Amino acid sequence: MSAKSQRVLPGFGLALGYTLVYLSLLILLPLGGMILKASELGFGQILDIALGERSLAAFRVTFVSSLLAASINAFFGLIVAWILVRYSFPGKRFVDALVDLPFALPTAVAGITLATLYAGNGWLGQYLEPLGVKVAYTPLGIIVALTFITLPFVVRTLQPVIEDIETEVEEAAASLGASRWQTFVKAIFPAIGPALLTGFALAFARALGEFGSVIFIAGNLPLISEIVPLLIISKLEQYDVLGATALAVVMLAISFVLLLVINALQWWAANRHKNSEPLEVAAGKTKAGAA
Amino acid sequence: MTHFRKSIATVLLSLVAGAALADATLLNASYDVARDVYKDYNPMFQKHWKANAGESVELKQSHGGSTKQVRAVADGLEADVVTMNQANDIEFLAEKGLVAKDWAKKFPNNASPYTSAMVFIVRKGNPKALKDWADLAAPGVQVIMPHPKNTGNGRNTYLSAWAWALKQPGGSDKTAQEFVGKLLKNAPLFAAGGRDATTTFMQRGMGDALITFESEAEMIAKEFGKGNFEVIHPSLTMQTEFPVAVVEKVVDKKGTRKQATAYLEYLWSKEGQENAAQNYLRPRDAELLKKYAAFFPPVKTFTVDEVFGGANKAFATHFKDGGTFDQIYVAK
Image (cartoon, rainbow over all chains, first blue to last red; front, side, top):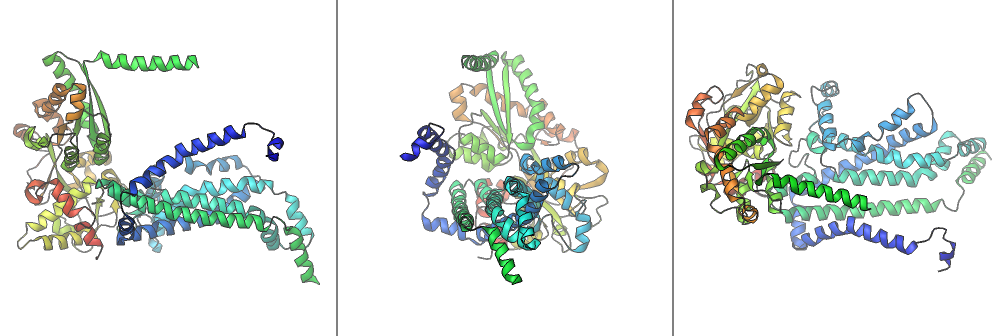
């Protein structure tokens, strides 16, 4: 209890209580209800529903395209965030505001717009299709939609972290003889790595649950371009609430495990560099290389 | 805080007062594209009811996907009447005890005041000469339709093709399933809904034929111009019904049985039938059907009851998990 005296703001008990009640009402209660409903089915029945050929294909499509979309955004989102923080150029504020648009747009609008753009007679599709690249109504379309929807997560998580890195860090690394690549890998990446993972995880989680934008561009063909949320809707159309809940619970369980793994990775990444000074390591290696 | 409470109280009071002005309030839970039909119909009924019963009645509408709507009613949405586009949605409410078991007999014509038919929309001049279901299943033809498992429109398409194949010489369930399988192979995508299929076909220029409701064709003409497409009536197609029912539990509780029943009965009046015709839905009234013959050419139709033994049975055989639709895609 010695920590208590050090706290500047009072009311820890109240705040914790509030947090617990708020999270319970908002998250635990609906999720608990869902799991309770699913428990009306046996474990074997849930597995049967999840392991059907159509469900398995949908799980594959959903997770693979979400992973790819989050990876694409981790790479290009990093570049966008870097440029928005480190450089100033005319219209920068405008570009910065653009990044948030996918959040604001109703997802169905995003899906319809993307399908129109990438259809065979669309602005982009008319040039892509002669090259043999079909985007709208293929699994590729799903990835495009998910990439669009999840871009802000990566950029907005990275921006404050990049802002915190002083340019002196790069200058110091350079003056100690680090190459540009070494500066990035040894000095900058350790600082932004955990945030990048967080952004990736958020984007991935969001992509898994996305429905509105995907159904308009996916084509929704069984075994090829059906996502899990569509199968859930399909079960509800049959008044099969239990089956829908079973799929949702399986989806939730897999997502939870994946997010847990990503969080553990992030924790590991943050701790690995806690006690070592990346700059010294970089500089030391360079010296050793020179000697 | 007191300010806040006062304003809440004012809002609540005005809501109560607003409802009290009318002698009765009815909520009609309906499917999505019925908006236009009831937008015109509701004022007609209000006038009729005022003149005949001397009561003013307030009418509220709730629109959404048909299945979503009945689920909302089952979960407690206090709709006095449901006006849907699929019989199995009303069957669902009957199973839950909200609607009379014999709802289809409570009104004439299977409780469906108007109908439509599934037709083909093809490109101008019909370049691929698509005349009947067989042409749609031919190699090299692309067909646009909504998802057969998840949308009413898609299910009607699927069952129309099935029934046609069944009625061919030597037709059986086996040949019908083979035929529908061939037809579905020609679908490059399954649209999210009826309107999405229309956009894909008309605006994105995909496919050689779009399968949809006859009533939708006029909407397309309004939106995209009459000269851009042709409507083809196949040799046999489904007469789609739009069943209506009184929600017994709700009208008993609210005491609105009389008004709710009258509201639905009036759909069969000359005015109600004419309103349907003007919204491109085939009226049951033979005289009006003749009057609007330009919209409604004679077409050979079947009903789901005749060929599939009822909407529920059709659904269970074809669209439940493991049904014929799944069999076409999934080997086991």
